[in-house]
Image (cartoon, rainbow, N blue to C red; front, side, top):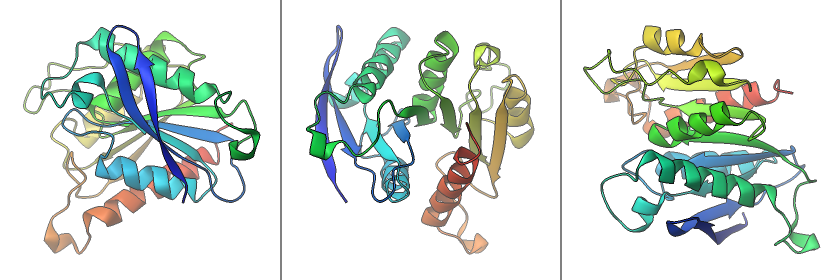
Length: 233
């Protein structure tokens, strides 16, 4: 599997690291652009699994980290910087001019899929809401609808402005959104699909008694995304 490290300049915040995974086999026409949750990085385990699994199915994948993660700080950047990072990465993903012809694995322009776990996906959803041309679809894993124990502090005011097909995938034991709350939020998006991971928490962990591993949950999430993506124009 072919991967390469990229450096992408974020206006006002310096360069961040991204890793591009080339599509294997028959190109699907999709580019999966993924951001991690607040406590992770470009090496986020679910992001690595998703990018490499989708690459085997003909999807070019780009995963990245935010400036504060680049600097190994614990506190996330402010929203304008997080959003500027998403825009810079999407612009880079659209631009294949830096590739030699032999390295260009997808016909251009590829359809972009904004994706992310927890905070990474939430900020990506801001971009999709602000600009309907930013991407062709949106995938939100473990969407943090509200802080744990604070259901009145919902982060859903922008969701009705999202015009692209949107895939929500969260565990049934996610403290950031119960299944009912997640469905209510998804109903705000004109074209939304919800997939629930039975017994999984916000980090996609499951109890040992379930007989499943975290990687089993990862696989279910990516398989569900792939099945949905194949039906998305």
